[in-house]
Image: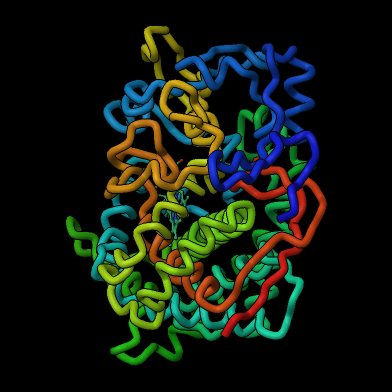
Length: 468
Ligand code: HEM
C-alpha cells in the first residue's frame, strides 16, 4: 500500500494491531495571531485550528472586528440549532456563496418561508418515498461501474461526482445520464472551486451586494445554472415519467401546503430543484470519495466490506430495509463522515442577545459549529483521529442519538436528505466493491480542503482491478 505523505498526520497501516490514522491538516499548538489566522483560513478552512479547539467546549475571539464563538458543547449546540433556533439565522457569509446555486430554496430560506417549504417537502423524504428512489441509485451505480470498466487508473473523485449527479438527476427528474450531466458536474465543480469558494469578503459583507467585485462571476454563474435547471424542469414537465417510475419532481409538483392547500410556485419548484441538485450530489460525492480513500488506506476493512457485500449482492437490494444487510458498510460510511464531514462547518448568527456556554453574546455574534472539530474532539471520541468504523456498531441513528456527531446538522433544520444520501452512498459503494478492488496509485499528499463541502487538496489517482 502506498502511504500519502506531506505535512499531514502520517497515515499508518498496521492492520494487525493499530488502526489507520488518515491524513488531516496540521493542528497549530497555540492560538494563531489574527494575520496568521486570516492567511491560514484563506489557504484551507480546516487548517486554521489550534489544539485548544479540539480540547475545549467553546472558544471566543474577535476577528477583524467580528465577535465569533466556536461552540463544541453539545448542550449549547442544541440550544442554538433547536431550542432557541428562532434566535439565529444563517449568516450572510455562508449564504452568499451558495445562493447562486440554491436560490431561495429550503436550504437558505428563513422563518415562515422556511417552515412552509420544509412542511411541503417532508413527504418527498419519508422512508417510503426514498425507498421508491432506489432504482435511480442502482442505475447511477451501474453507470459508474460501466465507466470504470476497462480502465486501470482512474480519478474516483470525478467519477463519484458524476455518479452522484446521475443519481440525483435521475431521482429528481427521471433524466438519463447524458452529455449534459458532465457539463453540469463541471459547472458546479468549477463554481465551488472558483467564484463559489467562501472568501474573507463574504465574512466582512454586511449586505448581499457588498464587495460587488466578488459577485460578478457568481451572478453570471447563477444565470447559466438557473437556465439549465429551468430547462430540465420544462423538459421533464413535457414528458412526465410513467406512474411506476416515481421521481422527486412529481412529488414537488403534487406538493400542497398542509395548512393552506397551496402548491409550490414555478420559481419555488425551480429553487427547490436547484437546492436538491446541489445538496444531493456535492455532499454525497464527497462522502463516497473519502470512503474509497479510507478503504485504500485500510485494505483489510475493504476486504471485510467486500465479503459482506458478496453475501448480499447489490442487485438484491429492493427496499431500504435490505440495506441493513450491510452493517459494516454503514459503519464505514458513518466513520467516514466523522473523519471527513462532507459539510465541515455550520454557521449561525445571533439575531438578538443570548447566553451561550455561560457567556453573554449580543446580536450579530457569529457562531461556528464545526463538525470537523467536534468529530475529532478529545472529550467525545476515543482515538479521535483513528479510522475505527466499529465505534458505530449497534448505533442505529447516531446522527440523532450521539450529541457530538453532527454530519447532517441538528434540530428542525437537520438535513432532509440523510436517508436519501446513505441509501445512495451504500448502493454506489457496494456496487463498486462488488466488481473492483481499489487501491491508491498516487504518491502525492492528499489533505482535506475546507469549503462549502470537504474536498481534497489533490484528486489522487486510484487503481481499479476488476475481479469478475
Ligand atoms: C452525505 C450527504 C449529506 C450530508 C453530509 C448533508 C449535510 C447537511 C447538513 C450538515 C445540513 C444542515 C446545514 C445547516 O444546518 O446549516 C444539511 C441540510 C440540508 N440538506 Fe443535506 N446533506 C447530505 C445530503 C443531502 C441530500 C442527498 C439532500 C437532498 C436530496 C440534502 C438536502 C438538504 C437540504 C434541503 C437541507 C436544508 C434543510 C433545512 O434547512 O431545512 N442533503 N445537509
